[in-house]
Image (cartoon, rainbow, N blue to C red; front, side):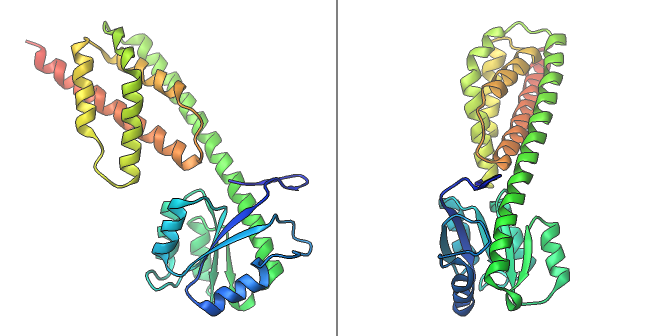
Length: 271
């Protein structure tokens, strides 16, 4: 996410996705505010504007390229109303969105703000200065929210690490060679994250296969927890707060599944 320092914008280009099916409205927005030239008192870098007339086209563009903000009309040929915003938000949860509408509907505006939009503007009352100011503040507010979210994620992860360290210290295990599977475990967690994000079935057979390898090493709960801790500490920084949050959540699911498999295996082996 691009941002501001105290003296102004720090990045040379602001990438905007304008999602609007009406050609006249696209021209209105573009010519009034986004066509370049002077922005008056509004401090913005040069703008790069990409246009989409349908939500599915917008979602494809978001998947394939970086953007700083979306200007979104809610009523499109393939999606109408608040569902338009929700579908876009699910794909780009960390992106600043300014909703543009031809309706004076404060109830709908409040609902989009409640679900994460940064602003809600009526196209009937739109002028260049108002829109540019909304873009600037939306991007900056979203950047601050993302930073806050990431800080909370780091705090929660640190608390989780401390809890796991206590568990690993209290739970004996004989198979410390299991730490040699750290890279396998990290790849499994990443695969789990990807399949979850793409709404595919998670690789549960891979989790079970890893549990079998751990059991062959006589690994116990301590070994699995230490493996998980090593993986968490070795993980680098994520591009977005959403990616970091997804990784942390799915890593926890993998850990729970592994411990569950080991418990079942050892129970079956007990005379």
